[in-house]
Image (cartoon, rainbow, N blue to C red; front, side, top):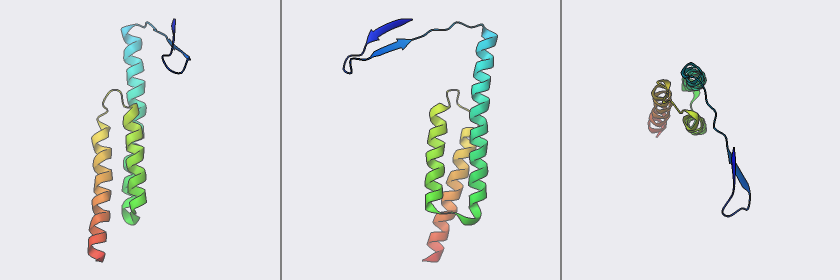
Length: 102
């Protein structure tokens, strides 16, 4: 480990470098990918459930959740696009309902 004094705050920062086998690396990547994919799937379910009673704040909350998950998606999950489409579909339904009410 190596420590270094921070330039402004006067604190210390440490880095730690771990070594692992290729199999361990693949397993770690797979676990991280699986966890993020599950979060995306739950988000799709939430968006689908909200289609019957969509509100702007629901769409905004789901978009915030999506951004939060994306910030942890280090391996570009295939589920990301599906979650994004589900939220945008919900937003479109809300917009269409708003236009019809005018």
